[in-house]
Structures are given as structure tokens and as C-alpha cells.
Image (cartoon, rainbow, N blue to C red; front, top):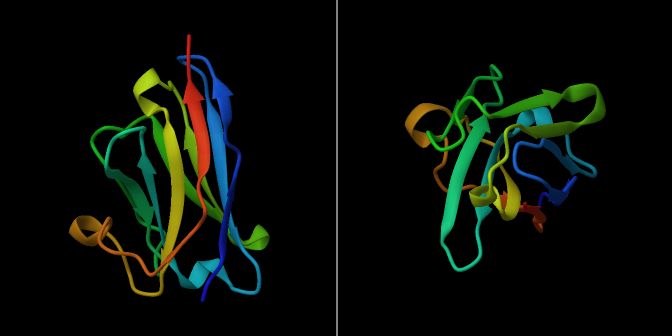
Length: 125
């Protein structure tokens, strides 16, 4: 089983930026499609976006399009979620997830096989 570890959460004011990292020990992440999800307090899980494994294509949910960017650094075996212009409604626990199959377009946020433990971000004024 792939063990994913997220890092980079914290407290930030509205309009600020944060970057999450997703890594995996013992596995090469570029072989996996990576999705990012979040769960706000008292709410269900929301898909944010994904980066495909074969071609690096990224897709995003409308709620974060233009503010969030997913990228890979294969040399560091890390996938990033860069978040800008953060809003209070972005407060949530954020998770990365991995799947060995391609993910893009309509299946970007479909069920993933392996999940990280989550990292918290709180956007407050």
C-alpha cells in the first residue's frame, strides 16, 4: 500500500498563500495520478483537482480554478498544491490521494486507491 504524507498546513489570513506537499516513501510518485481533496468542518469531502501520471495534465474544480495549482517535482518525488488568494471558505483538512491509473477530465476526482492522513489549513481574519 502506498503511504502518502502531506505537509504544509497552517494558519493564514484571507488573501494569503500556502503550499502543500505530498510525498511517498519507497514509491515513485510520477507513476501515479495524484488528486487533492478537502473536507471542511461539518461538510462532506470536496474534490479540488488532480494531476495525471502519463502527461502531467491538471484539472481543477470550479471552486479553486485560477487560485490553486497542482504540480510535480519528480526529482523530489513530491506533488504540490499551491494555493493563492485564500478565503475563509478554504478552511479544511486537505488530503492527497494516489491512483496508478490515469486521471483527467471527468475521472479526475473519481475514487482513488491510497490516501494521506491530511493536513489542516485555517483561513482567518
